[in-house]
Length: 447
Image 1: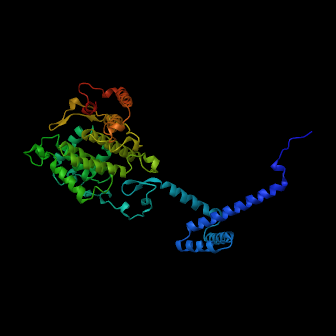
Image 2: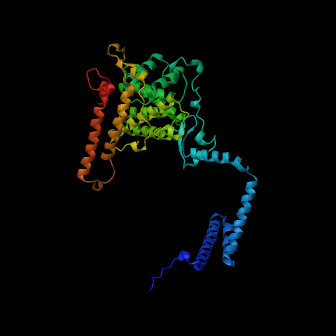
Image 3: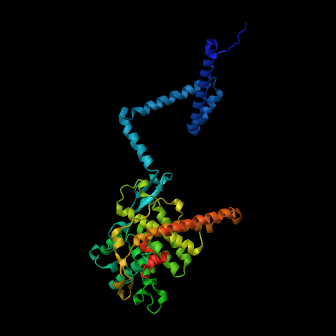
């Protein structure tokens, strides 16, 4: 009887030693080659050439590798003598790693908060560099504190307090409720005290006054009292002077973002689309420079209080609205795409919502038609509508050649999805904003 032969390599102790020896030899060769290659890559150029010369003239590569490893051990020992031993070194290592991780994307404070990404070497610039350039207008004393009682100190155009107050009321009655791009409470807090800050500046005030002029027929609202076409020109020229003389366009802060956005829409209203487009671009780029499109909490800015967070949100979503209006107006793709936005929507502030709105005119307020302003509710609905509008704008003004577009069925499906979103937006709109006689102008304009 014959039995089939079975070979079990695990039971062949004669060959096992040979296999182990071959494996050890191969591992040693790999270690030697890896040591030599790493040394060539890491050495200074002259040392690397010397190492290559040794490799080419040696009898045994392992000897060269052993020499390299010996040098590395001696170097590590020398460094170790200068460092704390044991657990004392661990906190320093943890601190370094934490600091490095924290710089991957953060908001930097230099009178304003700027976004600097982790791949930028700017995160390592020391105080005193251009990134931290001092901005005098952020000192909180841009105006003479002994004369803060006069609101005319914000502009050189006029010393008529009644005119300034009237034009400011015009702005907040007719322009601000739709193009809401600033925190009204924070602005007025510093405005009446004469304190230049990130919420109020001479540039912003003059831009607001220039817009307010377009809703008034007072002679002081015109550069040439006899020419209505010059309404607001004098305040706008003052705003431009401030931009150039104070380098406002390079000193990023919230009120400058707001001012440039207002200047852009004012130029559009005067038929100067080219100049307005440039101002809007400056505003949007500065908003991105400040990281307004990001959720501040995700960027390590946990020291921001609720007021500052709210101001950042209302400023960005105001810019978002300006962007979509410009894109619709000029037939261009949006400059602030939704895909680059993570900042939350604006909050509804009860005090501001309950504040009464009435149709303010050159004759004063019409108190008989007063009603809750619902400014934040309108701003929230507009931001949602702008997100949908952005989809349409990208679809309509995509520079991709038409022949690369998907099939007709795919286009119809896309449009159907947008239509569904618009229907849902309209359905979810608060009832107090529905069209009716005597409705808020900003609510009617939104419709």
